[in-house]
Amino acid sequence: MFEDNSDYINLYNSLEKIDVKKVKPGSVRFIEYASPGAMGTPGNFTMLTEDCKVSENNYLEDKDSLDDIFKAVPDFDNELGVFISSAEKTCAWDILNMGMGNCLFVNKKIAAEFYKSIKLFMDFDIKRDAYSPGTLYLNWLKGAVYALKMEEFYKEQNNGGDKNVW
Image (cartoon, rainbow, N blue to C red; front, side, top):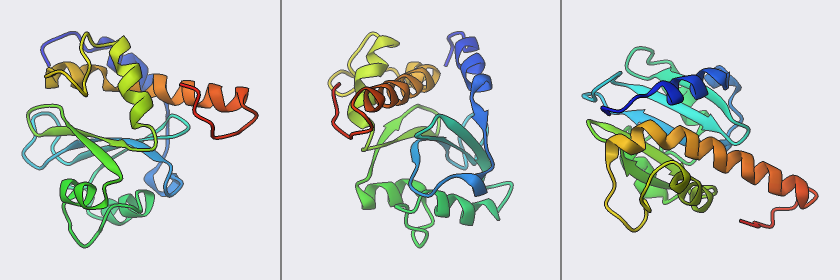
């Protein structure tokens, strides 16, 4: 987390922001999550949808947003009350440590594409090598947007089909 983060900020600012109530259930592909004691903004829960829209919420500051988050991410179990336990239970998400109480949830529907695209921005294979959590923290958004845009492009080339041509 000691590197320049201007690329992250510029990319984040370029994405369309939407209210959590407008997130289509099941469309979330990435979640940047900050636990209650995290460095940065504890309680941050930023969702990136399949069409590259961002919904930023803080479940510690706005308790009402919890219900909306669970509606947007229906494969999370509201009964558990803890996002990491919920993601592990459903097996629908990979969980990557980004250090200092921050983690990244990667929906398994896009995980393979993400692991390929993130290598363009980091000099190691996140699935095979030990990685720097701080480097992932600064680069995940670039890899995520790239993976989503490439998936969209290939679907268009395949006339809307789901065949993965990565």
